Structure formats: structure tokens, C-alpha cells
Amino acid sequence: MGNITFTMIKPEAVEAKNTGAILKRIEIAGFRIVAMKKVHLTAERAAKFYEVHNEKPFYNELVEYMSGGPIIAAILEKDDAVASFRELIGATNPADAKEGTIRAEFAESLSKNAVHGSDSDENAHIESSFHFSDDERF
Ligand code: IDP
Ligand code: MG
Image (cartoon, rainbow, N blue to C red; front, side, top):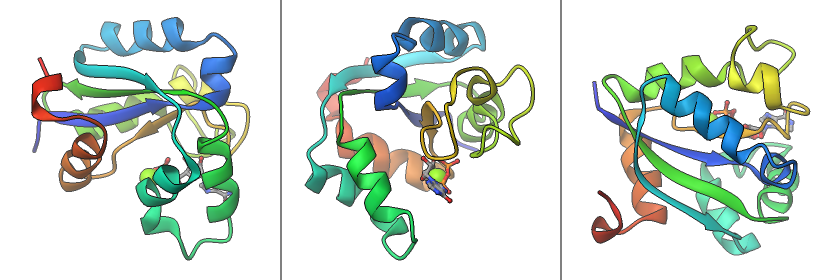
């Protein structure tokens, strides 16, 4: 098991000024912030990031939404980071997210679900490198 995962606080959560509250939840849960920045993805960059979903019916909507406003991108460190973070954020659909999870508290809908979390160690590394160079990690 790897010790890093990649997250984004999604545009609607940034717009709603939930950045601080979500980062607080993440740090209290024991994650260390290795790298972090605010960035407004172009549609091209968002399309590339979510390329694995390009066959899905919601792909165009997802790309438009994720490039519709700035996000907070971050690399997080903790033992078993990927699984531990998926547990902290809860299910993709906030209607299914357990009480106390970040999505249960902050998500607006299935698509506007407040945060991203990597789904494997391999993707955690790919996604981290998509957003951060080695000299931006501490
Ligand atoms: P995850 O973010 O929990 O890993 P994925 O299945 O990887 O969920 O989907 C990526 C993102 O696409 C979700 O976080 C959500 O924003 C959006 N999404 C997933 N399923 C749907 C859907 O059925 N309709 C609209 N948007 C969706
Ligand atoms: Mg996913």
C-alpha cells in the first residue's frame, strides 16, 4: 500500500468557501499536505485528467464542470493513503455517503460532489505528477 493520494477540492466547493473547512477535516484525519495549489483547469486539461471516463455519458458535463472555476489540487500523505482518503470522503453519490464523510457534509449532488480522491496507488502517482513537479513537493 502506498502512502500518497491526490485530491482536488472541486469548483463548487471552492466557490462556496468550503476550502478551509475541507482542509481542516483532511488534516484532522491525519493527512499531511505534501503539495497544494489553486488552479483553473482549461477544458483541455480537465478532459485529459478525466480521460479514463471519456466513454461515460457524463464525461462532457464533468469536463465542463471541472473547468468551470478554480480548484484546489493537493498531494496528501498518510499510511494507506488511497483507501483511507476514500473512506474520509465517502461514496461518489452524496446520497450514499456515510454520515460524517466530507461528501455527506459538503457535496451538492452526484456530479458536484465537493472533492476528488485517487482510486489506486498507480493513479495517485499519475494524478500527482499531472499537477505537480518534484520540486513543488515538500
Ligand atoms: P469518484 O470521484 O468517486 O472516484 P468516479 O466514478 O471516478 O467517482 O467519477 C468521477 C466524477 O465524475 C465523480 O466524482 C463525479 O463528479 C462525476 N460523476 C460520476 N458519476 C456521475 C454520473 O452518473 N453523473 C454525473 N456525474 C458523475
Ligand atoms: Mg474516480
